[in-house]
Image 1 (tube, rainbow, N blue to C red):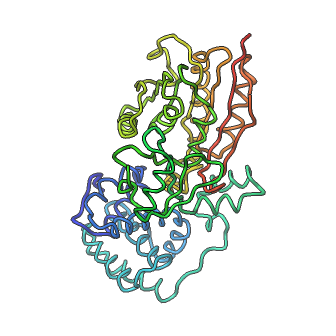
Image 2 (image 1 turned 180 degrees about the vertical axis):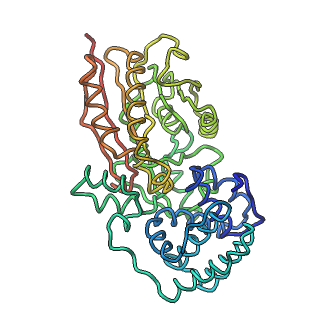
Image 3 (image 1 turned 90 degrees about the vertical axis):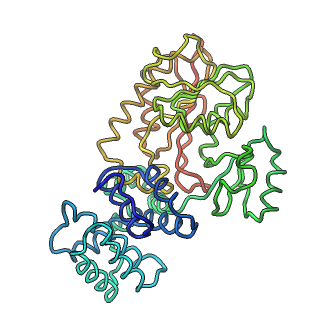
Length: 426
């Protein structure tokens, strides 16, 4: 299947193509949605593709259980894409408010765009069979969860008392959080701008300068171009607050991309000397874009957190934020493709990388300085177990607050973990 295949405009074909790229080629929806959706002018069409693709990813085990008995043999090679067309069709029939006529006929017609004319009859027969005898949601809790077995079992083991709620929230739609950039606009004035534009919003408790807005196009909100706000989940907004940056301090944001936390650090301490480092040169472009839109001033460095000798000037930092590479299991509700892109073998590799970066970055911290370790993971291996191992093996490291593990949906936030460490003066 052509990596850059494009159609004129066909909702179902485009949705099936994105799905194929995710599940067969291991690509991210964030990478795929941009070039596909920019060809559609209708917000309704864009939302349809977005909701359909993410819906299939959230319910993939159930859809596969429905589909497998209908296929006499697996579709392979150039025909494999038709399996993804079928998944799009099954999702419409089982989970969407789409007319059954459109769900079947338009999905069958999408086959022609993949040169699969000979399989239109098969697709039509399967969809009409499902229409006549709608299947039930499987009783198996793992299948019904929409998660691969390894994630389901890991969550169940780590959170036995909260398992059902965590999984329910992992499958919910994430709200849109904003952080008001108070260096550019007063909080109350921005709220007034939203109200005047008819935007529905709420102010969450315990999250200063944060708002949750109703589903909307954030680029059309008042003050977007002027940098009045950043799009940043409430859990991510805790990072800068917990690090507590002060003016005139030397601060490092390690693994910074896309730069939201660095911009928040600047917002809290605009006279601090902030260095934002990331190993991914392409993602640093996003950091630069956010920096410019939000009108923040800090130093952006292309560098590997595990190899600071290649970019560090030798002067220690007062505070360090380490937003470590992780499984991103805490943001699955926001990015459902993560559940299928991430593999169980990835976790040990990530844990090893996190430990390497922690050990490499710790010498860059001044005695008496603070390091905040953060992940958007809910897996203990990457979080409390990682920090426990680091403290056991690092003589001058100690916690100076209780760890914070935010679970998906808790106070409407994403899943996040924080541990704050202090370096002794001895």
